[in-house]
Image 1 (cartoon, rainbow, N blue to C red):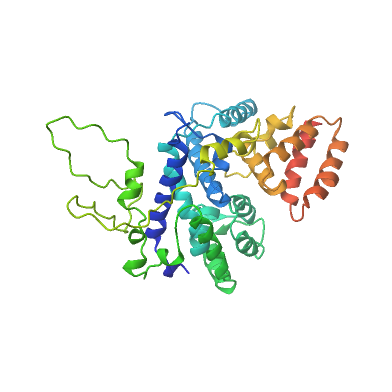
Image 2 (spheres, one colour; image 1 turned 180 degrees about the vertical axis):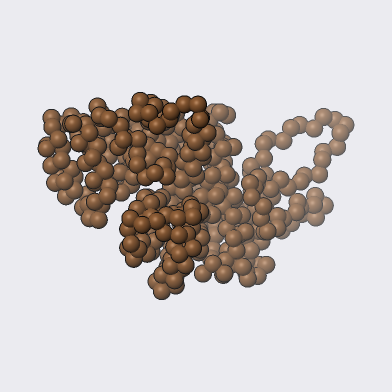
Length: 403
């Protein structure tokens, strides 16, 4: 499917959509000039969950790199008390996520492009999102990375079920095997149609817009995606011209692009040659429409933070909480990435339900009662089938708490 569609057009649309959504949020009349996004707002920023998850994945990759730079050959970072202190530091810092538009918009644009690639180029997605370009990987590591996939997850999971667990596998072997599996189990054409339909609800888009061989009449730019109308909406208010200086000829300022694109940007219309009216990129919202910033504010769960959903990746596969001596509180001991895994895999993405369950576990009197609550009550409520890996990690933490 990949040879039918243009990567440059996917990236171009991603930047346009990111600029449009960020304009709705950050430039809303009620928002202060210093407006930022926190963790819960990121996870609900768009109605397309896959986009939000890929933003989080990029954020955690940056976080992992930052944490790696903290290490020094002069200190013992493997000492138990240092590891515990680092866990607490990351948990506290995760409650202080603060993204400005400048930092957030490129992440959002890339997440949109990556979401298209899940369906249009599954092999590239497998390499970039599951393998993370590592030379080798185990089945367990690949399954762990699956928590960032929401669209067509069954395809990737089906391939992992064919592999032998517990053994590091070479990247070339995995990519060749996945490509063959994908060719034998192609995605239904409805998968792309459904995805494009979701994006079209946010910003006009058709399947033809993304094709390599699309005629000029069907390209993104010719459909007013990226025309001066959008650029004018994103520009600041014009400054008054001091007489007698004549007003400058208006020029088109394209949406800022972090990645070069092959899709040509339209030129500015001449003042002496006005263009015929075109359909604007973004239709005017009805008077009853809820602004994006109000919607995010209304949907934000009370007391929730990104610390209850995320933690950086760890190549070793073991969490700091699992290696810590004794757990006094599950809420404080469960590391950020482990929380995200529990929420996504065990609690159907519901942050507050996870929080309530952990709070209840922290209040139980002993390990036997806590184990029964997990293996009977929670397992039945959420239908934990093929979730043994995540359940066992939770049970290990419970053992440490009541040790």
